[in-house]
Image 1 (cartoon, rainbow, N blue to C red):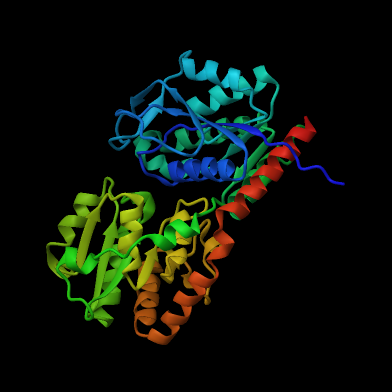
Image 2: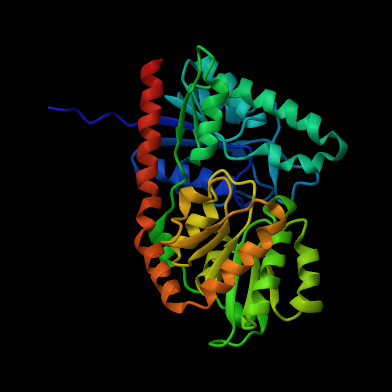
Amino acid sequence: MNETPSSLRVAIFGESYLPYLSGVTISTESLARGLTQAGEEVLLVVPRPADEPAASDVGSFAWLPSVQAPPPAPAGYRVPLPVPSTALRKVRTFAPDVIHAQSPFVSGLMARRLSRALGVPLVFTHHTRFGDYRHYLGPLANTGAALMSAYLSRFWLGCAAVIAPGSELAAEIAAAVATHRRRPIVRAIPTGLDLEWIAAIPQGHPRREAGWTPGVDFVVASLGRLAREKSVDILLDAFRQAAIERPELRFLLIGGGPMEELARDQGQHGDLGGRLFVAGRRSRAEGLGLLKACEIFAFASRTETQGLVLAEALAAGVPVVSLAGPGVADSVRDGTDGVIVPREPESMAAARLGGAIAALAADPDRRRQMAHAARDGAKRFALERRIGEVVDLYREAIALG
């Protein structure tokens, strides 16, 4: 007779957390929620928000002393202070079986130090392609990228296991540590989605907000941080080209960031005047509600590990048109629930993306089939499935000592 494994105690360290909304904070909350629902004991060790923390049902919290991160970090992005705290003493009392870091920086170093002190394995999820943000360093971009690469390699080697949300990143990390004798387990495990929660979100009203005509205007949407690394310029150029062929097209940008005002200005002038509406930063539920009322989701980011928003769009029943890039093929089934077009050469990327958007907009039968396939196939994103993979990895790391 097989015995049911006892529940695990998992301390999750995050560099940022809700209410700041990002792919990493969503993934951290999903991990904690999924583990709790699976019967594991969870302690979230994350920066204390500026306001009183909201009630939550995703486990217990150990709030790290925090400060607002300096620019270019957005407002509300709190980071932990590397100081002794009640939170760290609470982790010791919690006596975790495994410590899971969501960042390699301040909170990750705290996690590593405690994993060694407590003699428990450290698991790390590598969420961000940090080298793709080098443009924020100006003239130090190349030097900074090289130093970051070396630092990350050392951090990976200090872990028992490394999770990558996408298969391409997992392969890159595995290759980087392959020659080391004490290399970590490397596993591709995408962030799971609460499909019932997404299904229950009511449709928003993007046409009403933008002043567009219901039943006439065809809305293409994109959701995410409006920043250079997300290729917002390519999205806007692609839409311009698609709208030449399909004048009924309208473009909804959901999100905030350093390019928000530039995009908003373009929506008030020239060939995008009246065709582009920038909805700004919204809650996750509001953003997905607006997305549900749109016909196509457009995506051009060059810096994803998984492209979590792609999975969210598909789970919401919206077909995707995307440039090829890291993580895209992990979510989108080309020709089934979306269209993936080549990015290279970059000079042709906007034209290819715009052509694919126009072609799908002109084919309602194919669009309906893709929308059905997106909703029907969303179970592959299910949170419980991904959490099962994470727990199996925890037990493997614990068994290896």
